[in-house]
Length: 394
Image 1 (cartoon, helix red, strand yellow):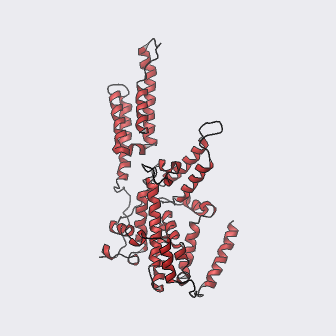
Image 2 (image 1 turned 180 degrees about the horizontal axis):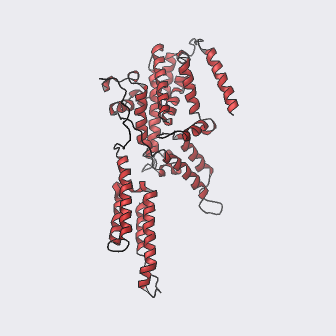
Image 3 (image 1 turned 90 degrees about the vertical axis):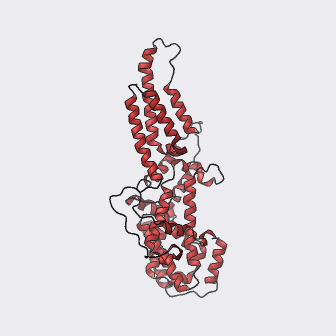
């Protein structure tokens, strides 16, 4: 409604009447009113260029009304060429946006890599270990890209993602991203916990670490974080004998992944790495939600004198720009819908609860189970070296 209200105000501005004491109405229309109308057209163009997502709402009604108005009031006037240029600019930009929103294929200068999935693997026969980690990573990345690229700037305002009962939902895509994160984290945790045999459980754990590494290779930091979060749940992380049974190379790789997405010093490692990479990139959205929460809670909306606190708005706008810069470049990958549906349809994840997960964990390795000492010494040395390196870096 506020968007239509703004358009109506600009329409009224177009027809600004002359002042009551105006002596020369022709001069008013040719000079003053003409200047006003040029400025209205400039505002409309700036609106379309800067806040183009506003025009994708309500099936494009706002854009239709805007262009219809401009065509009608400029037809046969010297402003007609300006209006025509506005229409071309709007059509080109919004066609590009709507094409992306409908999920059509972007144009790439290279072919996507061939999918790596066993031939003849039927959807009903898919299991975690049957699908290469690289292909799982690609499909998870495409699923997350679909959501991430649809997050609108206003979804980050007023902590809308915390207002779950609001109608309409103020941050639908952010909420969807959070729900997807939780689903993947719970899924990988369940994949480990539902394997009763230690040897096979180790294979599953190593495959999931491979998956996290492939997500890192794709610059999908959100994906890396959700895998690490799933493996760091209490139910999985306490499986001492399982973790001790994985190879040293997998153990070290997981430690490096943990360091990469660590929350220490406000995600310092991720914040330093991401700007050095070439897109496409999917950052961990929780970084910015944390920033925005601090900005909202730590700064008043108004100054002591009752004016709008523009410093707060500028800081929030900077965070939103950071999000938007990584929404521009799509991934050149082939979507495999059956595999994506399998990932999202895992019943183990939909029925996940911390209590059930911990019960499964205790069944696999009871509290009084003997702990393997096979690699404890080597890994203790690795942990010591890592702490020493941190102190040096600090």
